Image 1 (cartoon, rainbow, N blue to C red):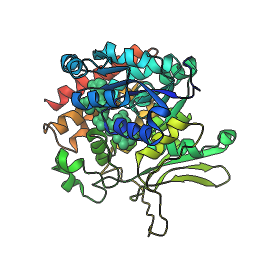
Image 2 (image 1 turned 135 degrees about the vertical axis):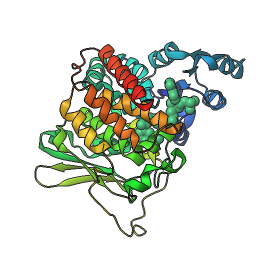
Image 3 (image 1 turned 180 degrees about the vertical axis):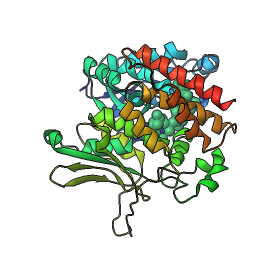
Image 4 (image 1 turned 30 degrees about the vertical axis):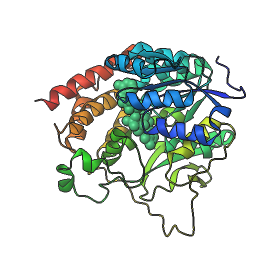
Amino acid sequence: MASRETAKRRLTILGSTGSIGTNTLDVVARLGGRDSFEIVALTGNGNIPLLAQQAIAHGAELAVTADDNHYASLKAALAGTGIAVASGRSGLIEAAERDAGWVMAAIIGNAGLAPTLAAASRGADIALANKECLVSAGSLFIEAVKRGGGRLLPVDSEHNAIFQVLEEHQRHAVERIILTASGGPFRTKSLEEMRHVTADVARAHPNWSMGLKISIDSASMFNKALEMIEAKHLFGLKPEQIEVIVHPQSVIHSMVGYTDGSVLAQLGCPDMRTAIGYALSYPSRCDLPIERLDFAKLSRLDFEAPDEVRFPAIRLARRAMEEGGVQGAVLNGAKETALEAFIAGETGFLTMAEIVEQVMDKLSDLPAAITMDDVFAADEKARQLAAGLLHQ
Ligand code: NDP
């Protein structure tokens, strides 16, 4: 198992150039920078100038671009610095396998699965932002973490909230969890209004500042769908124990309901750095100088049931959880393909859920995954089918 409790935390960030990655480096700086952390490896994909700048500023040992085509420019940008450079799938695995006690898993989408799994398998503590690991690989991923012996620390704000208020000694008394959802930019829009929206409109989240794909997933509520499946695996719950409530202010980040009727909630400003700081400091609490919640200025907290007609993603998540097997991987693979087509302007906003549902219909009899290869195969089948349906 990798060494965990050293004076300085040795940290690798998979996906350092993204929204979670840059917020993580911001938290690292606020928690003492090089006095508190040693940055082992940083990875990105296309944003080579930022990756090189981060690697130099934080004294990383290794910088990796996932795209082999960018290897030469990353190598040139880091020439003379002594920072090792790698690329491609093998480069990501090399980053994940370097001896860092802590790994922030913040690559977007299914691309994050293999490197996060490699880090979990060698026993690193995983700060998990990449929800796709649990959505696609579910119990196989949890088993890999258990075998490795590291801790799984949720960074997704809802799961981090539940992790904070889920009392370990009261686990048997958990009746339900309630995931909050902002409702996104289209919370009050009709189906007709949503039909013609573009990616630029859909990415404008009312409360959270996030990457492009997760912002659009929030607008379609596919983000909440993924989070429902993520919660099932993370907290070992039955589908019927997972509720979603729309809470437009995003102040309550999620709640746990117990058998005695008590509901415990975690609240805060909508700022991912709270969850990141919590995960990187666990089991202690850090001293994080970011905005505080001002209750005197909070005039109201609203709640409403999600509309599963306008946002079918919620219904599809329930179906994937109930059917089990590889349906999480199927839902996610089809969703990622449809989302990329939507971003490219090749399909409509509402079509994304239609494509996902059709792919789930066609692949409903796939056998459960026994190995990770079964997960990757289901993901690939879903992508191929979705691409075929999109180009019909
Ligand atoms: P971004 O799109 O902002 O960043 C994604 C990161 O992954 C970047 O470093 C990007 O590199 C890299 N990347 C992109 N494609 C690939 C690829 N094919 N292979 C390897 N690396 C790749 O995403 P977010 O930071 O928003 O989200 C990251 C993860 O965290 C997602 O799983 C998301 O669901 C989850 N999450 C995010 C939240 C947020 O607030 N943003 C909140 C909760 C969860 P480059 O930029 O160099 O191209």
